[in-house]
Length: 323
Image (tube, rainbow, N blue to C red; front, side, top):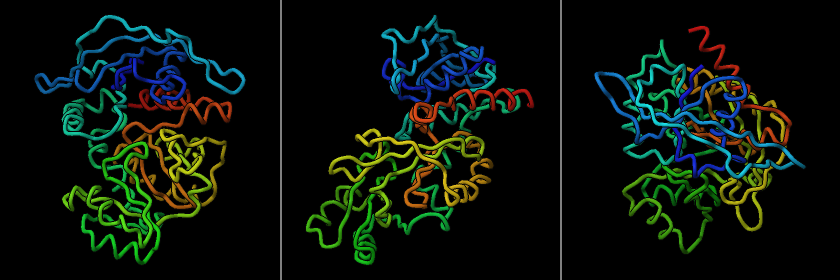
């Protein structure tokens, strides 16, 4: 297969952590061509999606004493080739959030790829549909009590009822801008004003789940099926478990309740073309649905001695062969 990955600059990626690198590496090991580009290298010409692509060769990471070892010059790219993306068997849209206006424009270009020729993972339409915070609201039976509002009075009433809550910017990533709210905090008005940009932009406010102290579980779904999980545990005085803010990772299984959550969202994810997804689960409740560039593969592989990247590519081989 010929595979294109739309990623952030490869020089900025951490090969010992980055899921895009893990999938590209697995594709290379399994004998497929790997090409890379960036969202700002896409073009629409005569109703088709084109891109400046570069072939890439990776030196796979190695697990030594429980840690990924990375060679200094771990990648090598070739000359640019301007080509129609329908020449690829699959295109992975793996640009990191936030979802900006240029990001949305890139998804419109990807809409021009004929699905019978080339599979796009995840679907451009699905990426536009699935705000990573708001999407979970479609599954009220498996989420904590949640509101979305920019109204200080509405947020205050919810906080008074719950006493403790977590405020999340709708366009945030990696735990950025998430606040812990407590009833009676004299800073409440200022915190809400800053987060909502003076009540002009809505935010999500969720009931605080005490189980967050035990970890924020990331479950990886492939075509609606859970294939692995990792627990991210807050450290020090930090209430967030995100790896980007220092959360410690630990091996973990998938409970029956979490399988129920996966089954609840699976049909909708598949209908929206969201093939590779990361669910965030705290205390048996779904808190977020990550679709842009969900991470966690390297940590799951390291802790469980598996290769989810190879599992993704083998699934893709079957998917492509059945087109």
